[in-house]
Image (cartoon, rainbow, N blue to C red; front, top):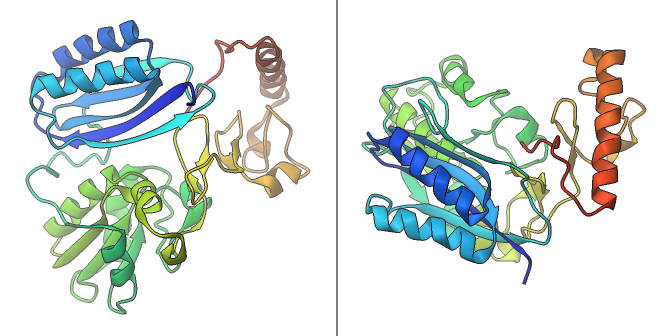
Length: 305
């Protein structure tokens, strides 16, 4: 059994005491030896953490004992090496930032579809398929025919809707994201904008890849994930992508062959912004990370997205 259990979880649920709950969960995660990120807000909880089986179970037991997390959206996977090297447990205004305080997914949401229902919907000609993820995620993999909003952050999504979508001519919308959380907010927003039918892939791409038979898999490419794996393939195994240490953009094999790529320093996406001073700092950091890895240690300066 791999050494690290990874929990990806979220739930939209009223948490008026989220600041106090944040402090309690931080203490629990520290004691359990977990790493990763856990975000709490008045609207709910969201995060991905990793640790031993007993340590991650301690967190799940604490959430279950709270009594409010009965509809927790939870996915688990395993890794041989640590996907994170730091712990961040924070109280925030939103667990996924759209910047629209009127959006309340716990009160109003679109129709969730499982993998089989999703595939059937993709074959219907009057459905507009939208990828709600950011542009660097879309570049790693996508469903064929999906609209790419071209966003760099989720709070740009409402601008895309206003600019490109019309509820009068496009009443049926289908959306997907990595784990489902962004689609819950996006579907609420679209319903409030007057779109009649709004569907989203329940559990996101990761749940789809877990559930869909290989012969029926419509996904193309890999799926970007926000941990040390960077991407996973159709079998949810670590993919071929790495990440630029300078700009954090995902890099495939062709990106790493590009003449502007320098390991640990810059890539074709950020070479124009890479000053000699910054490249020197990053080169030294890359050297220290490499030396730490050779000693079997986690470099304290390493950053995980």
